[in-house]
Length: 239
Ligand code: CA
Image 1: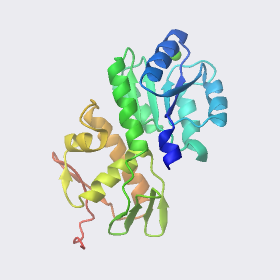
Image 2 (image 1 turned 45 degrees about the vertical axis):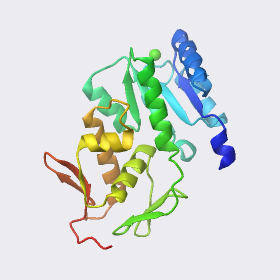
Image 3 (image 1 turned 60 degrees about the vertical axis):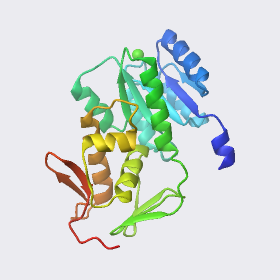
């Protein structure tokens, strides 16, 4: 663990505009990250097979293989399934944004983006992906989160969660039964220093819900109209 945390995080930049790659590399290295790069989607997959980045900045419009397809493949492979991905795109439409998040991106930035905002999102996402080591097990009803091994189970079923969904569930498990507004969740999970659209919360809640519920007919996340969300099966809380 000490060895892991002492190594600077490796950020992979997948982008075909070389000027942007140079600018990103310069600024990421200045912030203390290591950087590797790929100029098209196919090269991205090759680099991913060889290196183990901690985060990917992924352009949507790429030659050979699109960013969307690269993101799909990242999520499909066991080795990279948990890898945090920030999509970079010139397309700003809401529908595209939601589509990007739905195929598994963790965050989304529209070009031209501000550098401080990009850095804030990189930091926030790395923080979620490598949460401060809090030991111990959190549980609610049949949901169990081992914070040391990052293993999450519901009953006997192993639950696979991306970094954002993991942090969301951890936050809920720390306050079971409490109702949180989207803004509460943004502050608690994404951090107060970055701006994320409230609808992003809904996308991650939906992913968490699908992962947790599986075939179960008991929905563990209650939507409270006009108020927000709670981890709540509607059953009495057991201490
Ligand atoms: Ca491009």
